Length: 318
Image (cartoon, rainbow, N blue to C red; front, side):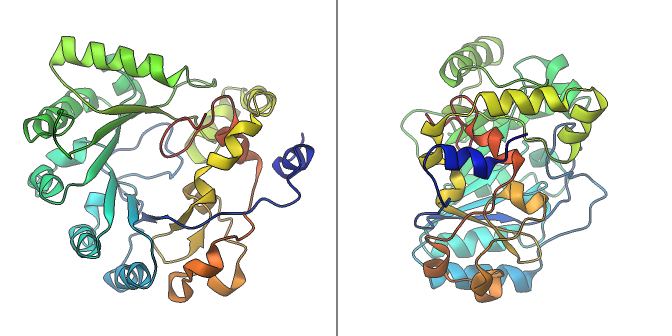
């Protein structure tokens, strides 16, 4: 099987380099109130890893000393970290745009019911996974009752202005296929979701992102158990699109793990593939100048981001 590095070489890339770091993505912990079948983080209710206040303060210092103005917060369910609201409030004061990867159902957890208003007051961009606009397919992937709970959270966000025209309150959804295949055309899926969610439930949102499932953790286990690993990887490799390379998220993003280590992306973090820049490998030594132009660590999973129209934290690339 060809390596990602070899594939890049075939297309004229002797080295795979980052550009300017514009986004700091924080994985603040692996604790989650759900345990989704496809989760590349392997998150769940029993996970105990979480970013401490001390590490959070180092992240905020790094933001203060850099020109980075986008903070993308993920988990687990990032809202379950005790320092979540502290980080959001402090980063907002630094003039940062805040993105939160929210699983929706966490907004109904005891003690977290105030979060929709907190999101609104801080003009947080909310990005949430919703496997489908029907209950059976959503619950089969994310757990019984998740679809109904997700609808309640979406209704609440809509009532506060999220997804509505004329507001700064962005509500974006994420769709990723359940099986061992690439996602369909993003624009067509977005049209279907907007039509069905509004006609069935009167729910509105801004954008829908399609994301390719990465052969990591639970999804990798599914591929092996179902006998689809070789077939799926071959499909990713054969679908390699060189037009996606310049738009890959690792080109302009650095991922910070819950313990303060730095990675080129959240996927590399889950595979424990640390950043190559030895002089700036942890949040203690964070230096955006050194990290801009760094050589990026790659692996077979990178074919997931370059297959077809590409896949990133913001959906398709081309």
